[in-house]
Image 1 (cartoon, one colour):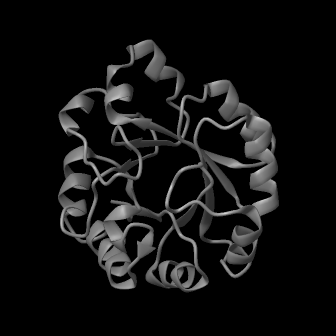
Image 2 (image 1 turned 180 degrees about the vertical axis):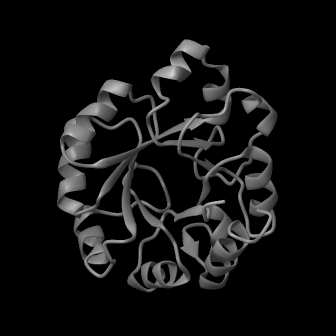
Image 3 (image 1 turned 90 degrees about the horizontal axis):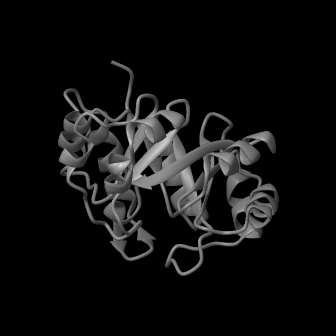
Length: 208
C-alpha cells in the first residue's frame, strides 16, 4: 500500500515549517481564512515557503472568500496549491486550476455523505478533504456517514485527529492520508514539534 499522505496545517513560523518538513510532511498549510487563530498574511507565507523544497506541497487555505482575492493572495504567497474550505463550486475549482494551482476542495463529512450520488460523481476527479462540521475545531466526525459514499479518488481525512487516533481512523475510513492542525498543538494556534513528528509516524505506521 502507498505511504499515507500527511498535511500539517495552520503553520505560521519558520521553526515549525522546518520541523514539519524535516519530519516528512507531504504538505504544509497556511490559513488565510479570516477569524482563525492561525491566520497569516501573504508576505509572511512567501518568506516561509522560500525554504521549502519543491517535493513538499505548499497549501493556502481559504473559506468563502472572493475568487479574485483567493488568486491574488495565493500568487503573492507563492504557494503551489489552493484549498477551498467553504461553499465554493466545481467551477471555482476549475478557475483556480486554470490559474496554475493544484487544488483541494474541503467538505464536511456529513455534507459530502448527504450529497446525491449524481452530485458526488461530479467531484470524482478532484482532490477532496473531508472534515468535521467546524473546521479547525478538533472535532471528529462519525465515519458511518460515509458508508458507501466515500470519495472515489484521492482524499484526505481531517477533524479531531491526533497521534493516538489517526492510525485507526485512517484504517477505518479508507482515506489516502490525513490533514491535521489542532491535534498537533500545545495550545490553540501553537504547534508542538514532538506532536507533529508523532502524528506523521502514527499515520504511516504499519496497519494504519
